[in-house]
Image: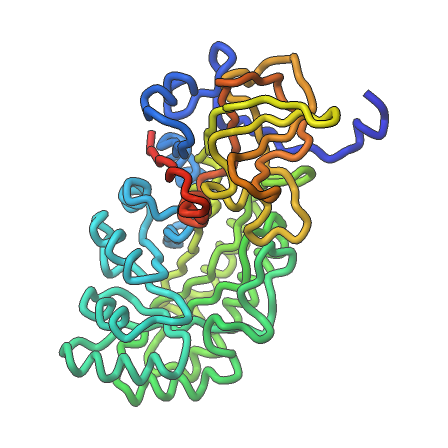
Length: 414
């Protein structure tokens, strides 16, 4: 191997899954046995043990009293939501459809929050009737909720999603700062808070979510500190004491070569300092950390079977029975500006030393259907199982499964 090759960035080790007899072990089963149990490929599999371990890891770092919420948009599979509801303190939803899944899963309505910039009146009515906390994102929602509260005889429980005047530096996706469709601009907050008071809504606090997929703990700490200080300032205009302060999430996982796992320790220390300050400045407020991808992303794999192997002008292509239509993110078409490979392996030959440079493609009639572009993988043949790691979040539900009429994939919690 040349010096240049040695210096190329590589993926962070995908060592969350054990290897037994040469195969990845997911949910206690070797991959080939799991595929037989599922009964078909392609499929997503989510490992209960890894979900449980990730929540425990966070509990060990977060200060006592800081609530942990699962943002179910990351993975709304009902079995996953039901499992997570038993591990975390609350669920964050982004539609009436997600609200139904959360409540059906047994989530406590008092610990469910509902965010989203385009809530329809029917959705707001469902949320008020369910007694969940609604994160307001516009003046229109105040007017609508005043009428709905009167109609139902229930004051709507509300917090305000604030669009701050800062961004989460280093985020894969910025969701606050500058012009945004999310939340209410901080400079408009005094007027909005006054409207909430006049409307008689049950004000509980603030929701600040500056960005997502961040691997820099110093940036997350800075955003949490700025969010807290902003909430303290806004509380002076609030119609009642702040009892709920959602400081967002933004915790990232390593997808691409050169990325390293997030260091949680500084974040825990920073939150402990903020919680200490809050005892004097916001004495009734409970802190909430809202995480989706970080809780479930590394616990999931996408598995597709190789159905053909072909060589085109010297380049080896492994054609799989799944691809872009099931896993848009791994194909590079879900927010990537420059396409990069997710970590991929041949799951039934995971420790093989016999390797080659190949591209793994799906069955669709488009060159965008690419799961691995010229990656060094164990040598694979027809019938072997290609595995995309880091697939527990924004997978099946974020993909165009109806595209070109191929079968939908299966999801299993194991």
